[in-house]
Length: 110
Length: 109
Image 1 (cartoon, helix red, strand yellow):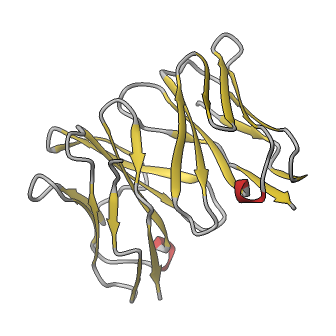
Image 2: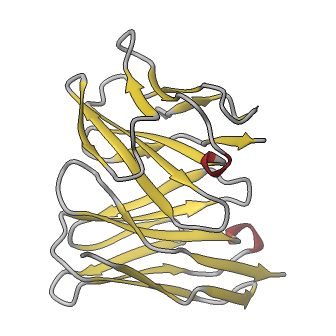
């Protein structure tokens, strides 16, 4: 069964450092998404990506965040200068008709 | 603003019981998703519905578009069903999902 793969599963970083979260979507999917879930809170939409550009983004997705599909297979979320409040579980998803989710990357900013 | 409301927030039941989790939303949608989040945090998509009913094993999902309501049922519940079940809706094909707060289900042996 096809699956969305995220790496790393857990990342610890110091405040102010840049992090890159990686996702390998399902190969024939067209839409790609990042969501996050702060511990104990709802899952929140960050950004959607289609045709090599951002199609929607939320208020959370400010200038500290960026996404790329550098090589046609990976889909990355970069946080330029991490803050303590960026600590969360980050989920990648891809879809063609139905969305498939990765297992998430737990980001801990210390 | 579309809100997705789930009930109950927490549910504890005995093994074998029939489980129902409800989801209501406030505007027109293109699809409704039921997802399962395991204790480790990973999310698994259980169903995507735009009308009617779907069944997969012991899981059944129904949706009533007119009433803007969906239910997830688990028959013959088992401790391994213990997880958080999340309802999410999309208003277009862009999958900007709007998420409910989740229902934490505990099935006791």
